Image (cartoon, rainbow, N blue to C red; front, side):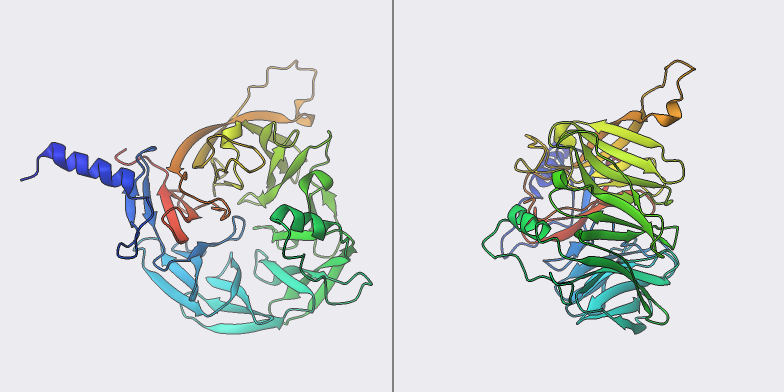
Length: 410
């Protein structure tokens, strides 16, 4: 009979070794306690090559029961209670977003936009994507889909050819930025397919996302090397209200990877003053214009940050040594608890016009030392805020995982 000490020893060894790469005759681990953090990690996907959605794409059904992921077979739904995985849409498709109002996944296939009910599988084609077009978001009441159209240098359609294949990722971004091609935003009515174009310019428009609460408000960016662009903007779908979210105040100041808070009241973003030296998660309140900056350490910088559904927590997916922060020990999934610095300024100073400073207190949730950050983990909070979902290749092929926010046994 195995002693309690032996049982404990085996458990510790399993916890510490379970995240290692596996051989052809050994399936990847489905659950373990991270030996460095004490948090439980589970593998949600069953098919190697599976991925979670991009960090600002809503991936959860409004009832909070299903998580949408992509697999080599198509789009699948993970039951967050049973962990059962069901294929919803078969074939090569690109997901846009899960609806905020209905249990519908919106996606593109062969130049058209489709909508499929996650539960009934009822599917309809909404519209064809215009030439040179790309779609990326659905609004809060699921009446509009937004995207961009790229034109050729003479203002005609379609848009640019791909960057030369021998360029690195950074060089491809610089190449595309230097094209200064005409682009414009557009919306498509999900009921009628009607296309409306607005806001034509010569900036590279990207990262288009609707407010989760205001059906006529769009967030987008001027894409390119962050130190060369005034990046983050909002605009209304009738073309009015164009607003720069963050005017720069110093040379080499950068910001990006912006997202809406769940209540739609704040735009949050990664801010560095200057690039690669001083790190913040910064917020801009849309109604008041008030700004909040939370500081964090170099190793805590993350490729993407997100906020929890109730706005009380943040999470980050960490980063590797070769990324902008040059972190020496940044390969972790992080949980952040924000703390505002007490305002003890004189009463005759209108502090509402000043930036509210704060600090993000970090907790490491998952050791990502075996993860190759060429695949960005893209963390998201589950609707019940008990788990953080991410994608990783730490076991070999990419899979979708979740880490429990509460420490195991607590």
